[in-house]
Structures are given as structure tokens and as C-alpha cells.
Length: 240
Image (cartoon, rainbow, N blue to C red; front, side, top):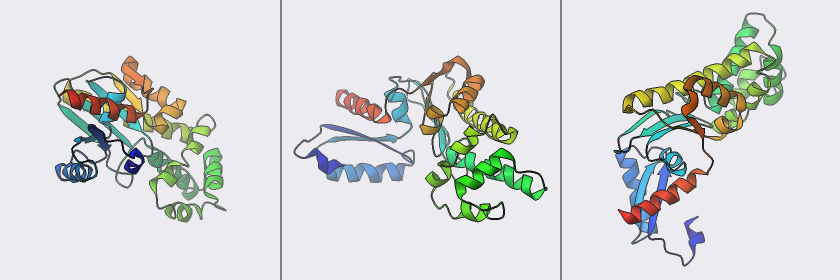
């Protein structure tokens, strides 16, 4: 991507990266960017901070649900806190991969107890191209990337009005996301705003509404792409 700059030489660059809260990882990326962009002022921040910057707020909480999930908060005095963001194999509750996994657990429990797998089970079988419930775990284990799991989450939202189990997964996901934001809010002692972001949270109205029900009027949607936040932070870097 940097090669596309051609003869343009930026004066300031801000990069948002998952794991930037780890000093060694942040330093490694800073050094790489300094090699690629000599003489440029470099800053590396947690990618969730770009959400707050894109929302043009210097204090608040970013609540992100896409493939995974994380909440990140920052005060006007630059204190920071993060909750979640552990990765899909360990956590990321309320993210797309988690939604799919919890839905699969729901229908597998039904199958084990001899119950009908319901509309949720039928849709999951179709989405995974599994012939029956005995094939479903193998099909899911064959999905090696979290984005592949998250892509199936649409099935859960599509059946939420038809299957109580699907509705329960959506509500539990919203509760998990809300708990992340509440924990950050308590840690930093700030009320908001809570900027909702991520492909799942912004494109699944049932999840967004359930999160709003738990967190209240402090929730706002991110209307600009996160990269706009990187541009804003890079501009601020020139003034400091």
C-alpha cells in the first residue's frame, strides 16, 4: 500500500494496530514504518483508538463487534483501558465467530437430547453444507479462519424471530458486549459517548438495538471509516 504513494512523502503517519498496547509489538511496527517512511513522524496506536478519533471525540469508549469484539476507552487526560479483544479461540464474546459458535452449541445440545434442532439448526446445516447434525461439528472444525466462522453468523440473526435459541444467542451477545463497555466505563470513570463500530454491530439491527437497550442513550454509531481517525491523529501529530 505504501508503494502507491509514489513520489509523495508524508510528514506524519498514524497506524492503528491490534496489539499496539504491547510495547514490544508497538516498537517493532514503529521501527518498520520509520524504515519505510524516513523522516516521517510516526505514531502507532491501538486500532480501536481510531474509532474514537474518527468519531471526533477525545474522550469516550469504542465498542467494536465484527469478527471479534473489544471495548477501548480513553479519557481527555490520555488514560486508557481495554476489555476483551482476546481472539476468537479464547474470547471475543459478542463477535461474529462467537455468535456462530454459541449457535452451534445450542443446536448440538438439542440434537444430543433428542430434540428437534429447529429453524436455527436447519439453517446452520444449510450454511455449513452439512447433511445432518453428526456432520456439523466436522464442517465447523474445518473452518480454520475466524472470518469463516463469522460469515455464518447471519443465520443466527435471520432466525432470531423464528427460534428462541437464536434470539437467546443474540441477547447474550449484546449483554457480553455491553459488559465490556460498562467495565471500561467503570475503570476510567467516564460516561461516554460509547461509539459503536464493527461490521456486525453496525449491520445487524437486532444486535445494535439490544446493545442500546443495555447501554442507553450514550451510544452513537460510527459514521466515518476508522481510517479517517488515523488521518486525524496524524494531523494532530504535526501540531504536537
